[in-house]
Image (cartoon, rainbow, N blue to C red; front, side):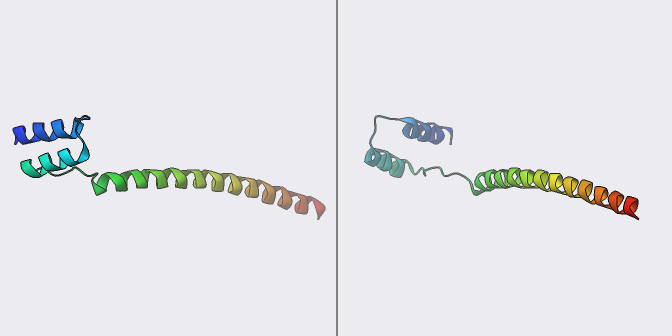
Length: 82
């Protein structure tokens, strides 16, 4: 297993070989091309979405704070008017 892993890394990192040569070597050794795991992709996407939601929550918090202040001032003005 270690030998196969070493050869796989050697083939993957070799810049001098063209694409066809790498394919032939991979086929001969029985190694497969590595792909990104779906869980890593999903984790990155989730992190981006969490950051976006955090920004939206911050904006909504500011809006609610502003509206609360405006409503409180309006109530005070109405109480003073009566």
